[in-house]
Image: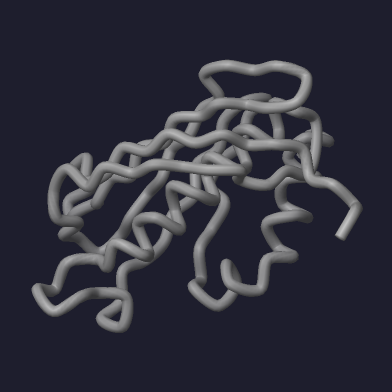
Length: 139
């Protein structure tokens, strides 16, 4: 396991909300991340689709990891926008994010969230863009 992956897994494993949801860090790169989550009944809305809040969580967290890794360490999402393009129907969701622009202080990232059906087919359900900044130790 690379130093980069060790850092990412350490940060990911320290997130209480992520542990509560049961999300998994599937892969990381120097400017990318992939996070997956099984869709259970308690993560759906009234029509049986994955709830928008869960989709937003996946986009937010994947982009924060992609940007944080590109910036060289721990990071926070400063802002993001999401477009829901299709209902998320499937037993699993997967978010893939990549840094698209990088400076010393911030990373602009794009994320896509896919619903995965039982046969493994992926359907794009959301596209997001966000700005990630290095985490500060100040409170």
